[in-house]
Image (cartoon, rainbow over the protein chains, first blue to last red):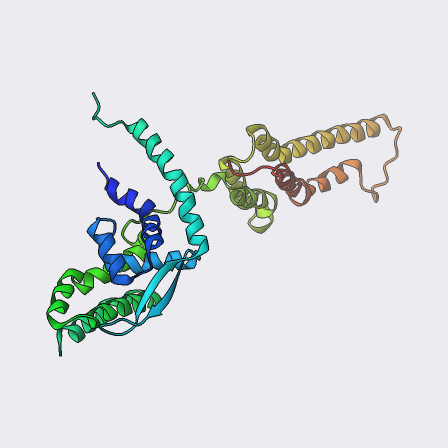
Length: 111
Length: 201
């Protein structure tokens, strides 16, 4: 039996990927959905909003409305100070973690 | 009905089962995106968004991951009935007072339950079950000895027996009544006492 390894890994990191995207600039829903689905990190916009809800519940992101040039006001998401701190923690741990995993699983198949 | 309102209506229908807060955010996010586009671009975006049913399903999966990936609750193996304290307590009570409710058969049922229970050692069970018989045997022996002594005295003519007073063996015969009312309940109570501090393994 094999399991969807990619799905398990995405679950672990997708929230931090959103924090990473928002660390560059505030983004609205479709922007985030497009960026994440384009990279295969979420399946659709249906997955995005529950994820954003969790980030907001954790106090890592907040929202603000901004009028758009071509339609109604858009709801933007941006990082809070806690979100920035959380992303910093993740960055500090990600590289050593990824190196450790690579060292353990190797890059080639079993001999 | 234009493409936007048609899509939003289908989305509303699909999101009925999604928790309200999440559903309204998805709806608002998609509505604001579609409202910002020209009609031609709307059709492209709707194609990119995909089937509203799929969006709702994925939202539900994200909100309640267990829905599609059920983790069975840990199965706690229940001990067999005869290994439970409840069964042992019922057995001790049946042994102690069952015979008063249904003479002999009640005690017999209690004895069978005590033997089935795994909460006592075999020695403890035998003590409780044999105690009434031991008491009866002891009383029978004492009665016989008493009768022999009384008979021996009369033969020797040294003891004058008042027939209005009960002889020693009369007390012994009455003592047999103590077995169902005292000895057997004591055996049941003793088994209950031995249960203290023991738990189902």
